[in-house]
Length: 360
Ligand SMILES: Nc1ncnc2c1ncn2[C@@H]1O[C@H](COP(=O)(O)OP(=O)(O)O)[C@@H](O)[C@H]1O
Ligand SMILES: [Mg+2]
Image (tube, rainbow, N blue to C red):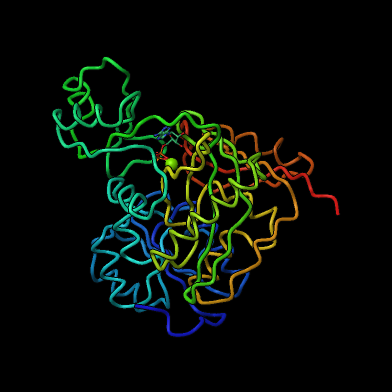
């Protein structure tokens, strides 16, 4: 269902998922006089702390979903693994943004990569893998060092295995667990970047300056803005995000992860939601990615993605957030803590944005 008219202040936005992204969306919505109702299963749901209302229920609970649908004016999500049935149930009752087709494509690495290739967008050579025989064939097809990734439910490098020349496909397949997967060639990239962009119900488009992203143990460690890339690569990156969002008739913020290579820009993956590599926009921009997402799905004019400071965003993982007192005293540094009850190694507990304001 499409949004019939812009949602005035006082309207209620439904968000599936109760983590830090939902929390930062709710904080941004509140600034615009909009209310958020968070829906999430039992667990550590720090978004509940800052929202107008919440429902704690499983995603496959029709009565709870029905009541949620009745209480909200539009629905969005903070993670891309929303079950298809949940999205369909809500999408029949009220506007869902981004839409169900976007979820279907981005939940599966094979459909995602195929969609990108069909659009003529560069991706690493890839092939589908369903058993040890197709793995052997796929490794021959992509040739060279490769990465095996489960088609569904991977994040922060989970469900991934690097394969070196000479590894035995049968042993690799057993070891990996045998879920439907893809194999990709390892890209010799110069840098990883991402595009954080928004598209409205009316087709309006706005993209932020491109961050450069560094990962450690497959988890985002740091985003630096602006990325040290050529203006041509930056333009190409924005153009790719525009092509993708237009083709999908996309509404909301999208995060498009990319590799910069000697041959140009390749897309790694698409996140149909606000993205960790856009957290710097909270302090370095007039309108954050969270506010921009709320504006887009609520039918408001998109905000100006103007950036008034250079910035380095660093994730606080696990026990690093215990240093909050020192971090809070640093000059030109904004501290964000997610209010999670439990710290685990590698868990995203907060982030800091260190600003270097641009001289006029
Ligand atoms: N084909 C590839 N070539 C080189 N590095 C890769 C490739 N695929 C993934 N990586 C590395 O692993 C990281 C995580 O992989 P990604 O596909 O983004 O999965 P996730 O869903 O876990 O974020 C990437 O950011 C990149 O650093
Ligand atoms: Mg990724």
